[in-house]
Image (cartoon, rainbow, N blue to C red; front, side, top):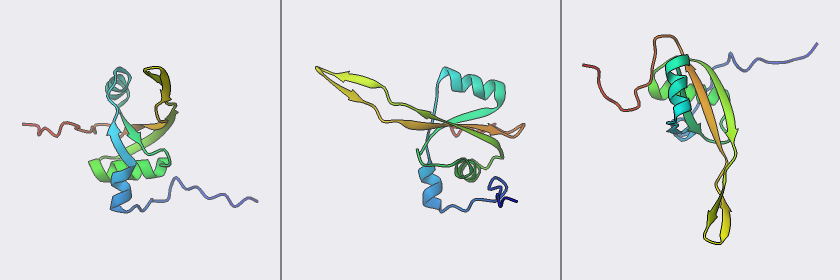
Length: 113
């Protein structure tokens, strides 16, 4: 018999510094806008070492919403040219966060009148 522990059900305890460090920025693109409208998802740029339970806990703490699912993707940095030499942009991690039905994240901070 194996001693596998399901970590998805355990609540993750994070410091306030870690919570604010995990979420770097929202990703605004055509694909992320379509995901928000169609699947009730939000897309964020996150730390490369952030795990799915940490991302879920950080989103729930920062935006006061209920997260149903987190899917992550590692994005490879592009090779760019700087004059005669070539450079490479940094790799980064993208998180697709599925929110509970009826919930949304207001990135602009505008109050509903």
